[in-house]
Image (tube, rainbow, N blue to C red; front, top):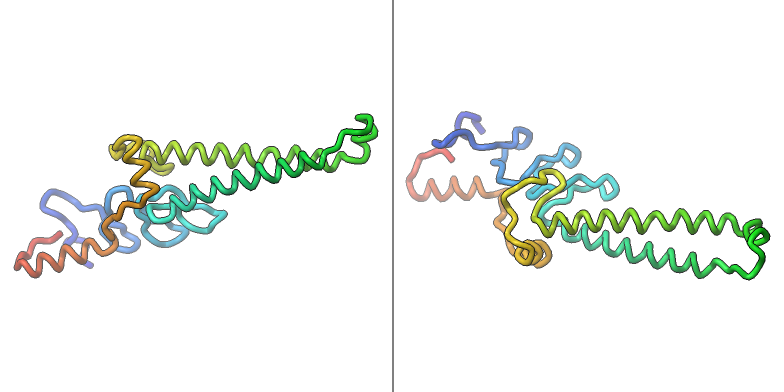
Length: 175
């Protein structure tokens, strides 16, 4: 596509220079995934994927499930600690179990903080990439839009659809 043809009458239209797709609001080109992601939140190295409009709710659900599993593991580790012997004798034979319990107690803390931060982002309709934005529509609407997955327009083909509509109308303006 000719870069000059991407100029709109009102100014310059934002274009992803890597894939030459018109950039909608809240989209970002991820260099690790080599694709454009709408409502880009972050690239997760643990999942080897970007968190965006289509999979961010699953990521939040994953964090919630992870927190439950960590708390369950912490409960199981606690149930394995039996303090029927004197403290010194118990510590001599069970120090590894105690160290494991202390290490396991950090995981739910980290998962809980990460879940809380993402729930805050969802409630305020913001992302970790661009925290300040005008997209906050109130708590109830933000949560419903995020978790109920109100359909959004396929922005990847938006430019092609607009060009086809203009050709059908007989218009020759550049988008």
